[in-house]
Length: 378
Image 1: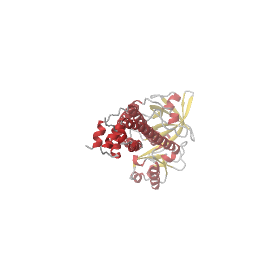
Image 2 (image 1 turned 45 degrees about the vertical axis):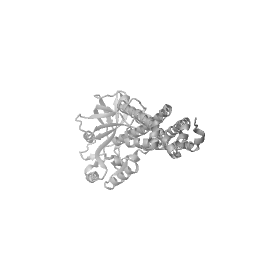
Image 3 (image 1 turned 120 degrees about the vertical axis):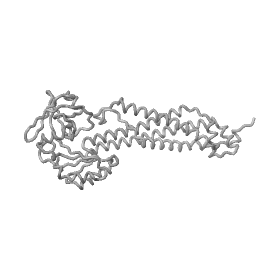
Image 4 (image 1 turned 135 degrees about the horizontal axis):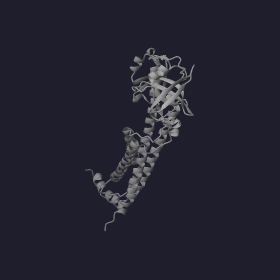
């Protein structure tokens, strides 16, 4: 065992204030990382459910008529499916309509998707539509589609889902692809658009845009990345990430200066010990290593406590959605959390390293300790 390790193990620093400050700092750091990751996951997945990661459409897609369907057989989708990063391909039919329930009316955008649900004219509606019109699972939903002539369909609400993002000021209703094709008098190859899901490695920033451009080369349709379709939303996410970085730096600085004050107190209390160690031949560097080891134990203890509290909260929030949000302001109805271990580990390591580097500042005090003045022979 190295002398510094042995000596540091004998020093007892009862710095519960420092441990508490470190624990709170790491608690805030991990929660900031988890909540940021949660928002990105929920919104990213919500946008993907809404339009896919890449959407193939005609230059002038029209949600209000049943004219000019896109023929699936002309889209070269077999080649697109073989492009690296393409996870799935989903044909969809869009049609704008008006829902009437009693005296209440609401504009909706009905999206027909492939479905295994055999319920005739079954639809899934968002909670906002459910609350506005008083609709619930099992109710009938009369919907009017305006075109060259008005078409009416009496849908059955099969379930209610939490809507994340609404489109074109209309609430999104999910229906069967076959039902919507029949509504438009299209055959099984007629669709409004094709939505393409990408593997996780290609679902961010420039990589998604590059993949959309690549997909567009193999299709006669316009390929639009979700990042471009909802650029304001993703700009908001980037701003959120910037805030997380600011919180991370602030908490590291707060924890670091708390530890600096704690280490200075420990050095002043053990000034005679420092003089004795220097008197028996230990270098300034060796003495500093002794006290840095003690400080490292305090930081690690606070880090473990903070991590445990943060992860415990994440598990509780993830399973109960205890903390709620206003979805009109935050896009989701609860505080989303995601335990992203790589990000958490990076945040922990970065914070620990920076705090330990800051602790080199009070160690400069050791060089000023004179053994002749601090050690008294009685």
